[in-house]
Every structure is written in C-alpha cells, then in structure tokens.
Length: 322
Image (cartoon, one colour):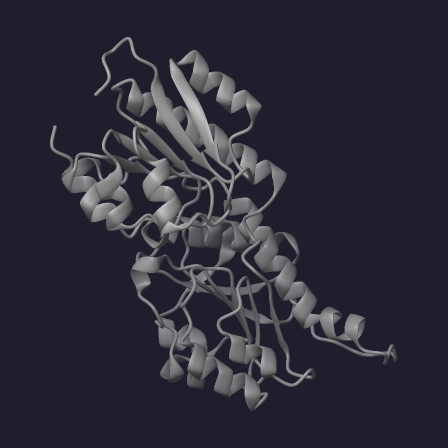
C-alpha cells in the first residue's frame, strides 16, 4: 500500500477520453497515469493492468467483472466516463464490498445523445437513408415531425433534452412516460404525461430513454403490438431495452420502423433492403464536446476520491464502509 507521499497510479483505458490537459491535472494532484490504449480490453488484459493501480478511469467499452475487481490489490476509485455504469461495471457489488468508490459522469453526453435521437427521427421521417442508398431519386413525399404524435419514454436528462429540441423544431404533440411524473417540466416545455400503454397506443414516434433499471426487454411483444401501424421506434438507450425477437418480427412484417444506436443481433442484417430499419455501433454519445465534458468530470472525480475528498458523482457512497 502507498503512503500519503507516494504517487497514486491511475489506469486509463482507450484514448477517447482523458486528454493531455487531464493527465496534467492528475499529475499535479500527485498521480501518475498509465494508459491501456484499447477500446475493448479483455478480462485477462485488465486483470494484469489493474494490479498496483489506485485509480481506474474506464474510458473504453470493457466490462469490469468480479475477477478484475478481485485482482485490484490497491484500487480505491473506479470512474466510468459515461452514465450507464451498471452495464459496464457488473462487478460493482464486489467493488463496494472491497471499499472501492464507483462514480460516473451523469449528463456529460446528454446533449450529444439527444441530438442523435432527434437526427434519427428526422432522417427516418424524411426517408433520407432509403433515398440515399437506392438508385431511385424520384420525387417522394415524406412524413414530418411537426404533425407527428411523439412519445418519449424516460424523462431524465436526455429525454428532457429531446423534448426541448423537438419543441424548438415546432413539434406540438409531445407526450412522455417516466417513472416519476414531472409537472414542472410538463408546464415549462409544454408536454403531457401518459401512462406507458396509453402512450404507446397514441404515438407515431417513440423515443426510448429509460435507464437500465427499467429492465431488459421492457418494450416487448405486448408493448410493440400497441403501437400504430407504421410507428417509428428510436432507441438510443441501453442495449436490450427492446426485445429483439419481437422487434425483428414487427420489422420483418414491415408493420413498424426502427432506428437504433446499436445492432440488436446479426439476424437484423438479413432484413430486406426495403425494411425501414437503421442501426450503427453505439456512437450517439460520441462528440468532441461530450467527450471533453466527460473527461473533465472523470478527472475531477478521480482527484477528489484519491485525495480523500467527497465526490457528488459516487454511485455507491451509501453502501461504502467508512
């Protein structure tokens, strides 16, 4: 173990986050930085890299398992550069047992994800993807967002940003469902609350922003069946929010449309070219501004935690033994 005069060693994975200015700040706070420059380091690589480290800034898409935590002989703090820490730190219970603080960067990428969600809505409503990839450039009348009934599931930071952006574009019929109703935002933005199933029945466009706490497949066959024919599903939330078998069936029948920030499964690649479906590999959060903001938060949190200070972004503080 180190003494108060020893430098604290911090592991940083990938190179998407934590720039030179952040390394300088960490070094000024008596830390040394070691980077494992891989976006998806393996469990074996992390088990080796975590040894002797006091801090770990999770900047890649690796999953921190119990085995990795067990190998962390000096670890005091683990900071995730995103929001969905539960998905990327499955070993959080083990970390808590060992007195390791776990924190995240809530809201850092909220605007980026909201921008991406609204962009997908516009692109799908105006049929931009299909018009761009086919040889048929004929005149085509498309749908709009202005006349659409838009439903937002999950009115957290991202969902709220989506609602504000849609209002700025002129959308007038916006409803939401969230675990907690938010009357102040309803009045401020001009949106209305509906129960989940009622929201699904009366939405032409659905945008998913509930947290992982909603549970895998919380939008399943029953929920999809409630959507009107031709409804559009925008999914920039956690992987598995929509039951993939049920979604595949609806898309294959061409009853629904969907655009997602991830590919649910390889079978979706087999959908006919004229299916109204778009996906990419998790890039909604990825903008220069969002990455800078997340790096700022992660660096400040790491310095606070390694210097023995409280940090407001610690997610397991109530369970740590002090």
